[in-house]
Image (cartoon, rainbow, N blue to C red; front, side, top):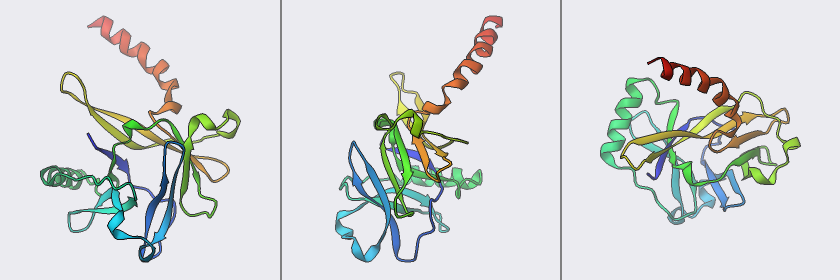
Length: 192
């Protein structure tokens, strides 16, 4: 699947006539900054994140220059819009590019104070990572070998004392919950 789900959140308030733009995307970095629409060649950009607007249509709010346009199936968009509205999630959940194919990344506030810089977690020392209150901000979907759709939290955003925040892929900061959850689940399975 090419699409995932994201938690709608902002790092900064955008000025009129600007959009969030992934200026550099590679295996080693992702820089997302606000850019003036007038400075972007609109023929060379593609949306990579969408929210459900007041008119009930998915509207792009983040872009990149990958040239790999993702099409959102009209029937899927209609069904998802109905679901989000029925559960009052239209201001909370967005459609994002499926994050399943990226390694763990850490996200910092851009030096300008506007936007973000993401680098692979493997490049950051443990001493530099002091997270608090992690929040899952992205989910990926996969169809397994049995045809069952699996959903997994891939992006985790955590505020840091420095004002930066980190984003993990595959929920790495949550490994301690496996130890606490598995024994009760195993015990419940033995009783049935």
